[in-house]
Length: 83
Length: 256
Image (cartoon, rainbow over the protein chains, first blue to last red):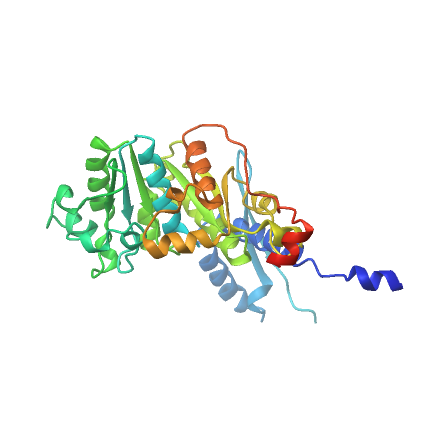
C-alpha cells in the first residue's frame, strides 16, 4: 500500500455488500415462492421411503419444480452415500 | 418504516386535489393513524364496530379538520385481529366505494392477517421501503403476497399495480457508500419507482403534532410526498431530493 492510498482511506462500501446479499437472498426466496406447497411433505415422504433401503441425510434428497410454458418438470435429486 | 406516515400524506394529498378520499387503519390492536392525523380524541366507533354491525359507516368515519374531502376510519384498539374477515372488509369497501373516489388502506407491518386483509381488495399498492436490508427483503415478500394472494391474483385478473416508495433516504450517505441507492433498491425489487422521501427532521416534527407531512409544504419531505401523489394520479414529475447537496466551505464550517 502506497503512502497516498493511506490518505484515500479505503472505507468499505457497505452499500454494495448490502446489495449483493439482498440480490442473493431475494432470488433464493423468489425461487421458493413459486414452488408448490406440497414439496416439503413430498421431500419428507421420499426420504422415508429411501431410508427403508439406504441411510441418507435430510439434505440428500432435493426436490424442485421447473415450470416451462407447456409443462412442469419435477426434478428429483438423490445423493447416495459413498461406500 | 413509514407506512402510516405515508398513508396519512397520500390520502391528504389525494383529498387536497379535490378527490373524496377515505383512509382506513388496518392495524387492529395497534391503532396509530388517528394519532398521526390528529383525530385520536374524536374516535368513537371503529372499523371492527362497522364490520360487526355495531355502528354505521357514517358513525365511524371521522372527517378531517384540515381537508374537508378527507375521512378517516380508525382501527379497533381492543379486538382480535381475526375480527377483520374477508367478507366484512369487502362489505365496508363496497359501501365506501359508492361515495368515495379513493380508498387508502394503511397496512400493519408484517405479512400476517391484517396485512393480507389490507392488500386483498387492492387495485394499486404502494410498497413503502427504507434503504435497509431487512426492509427491502420484507418488501419483496409482500410483493410475493400481492402477486399470489390478492383478490386480483386469486381471480386471475390484471395484477395489482405496484409502486415503490423509498422513505428515509439520505443522499449523503448513499454517496459515501453507506446506504443502498434508489437504483439499487429498484434493481432488486424490480417495480416502478413512485417517489423518494428524503430522511428529514420534518417528518418527526409533523407526526409529533399530528400533521401529515405533505402539509409541510416548505419541506423537502412534504414536497416529495406531493410529487408522489401527483405521479400516482398519472402526472409526470421529475424525481427530486435524490442527490446530495454540495456544501460550500462556510456551511461546512458552521453546520458541520
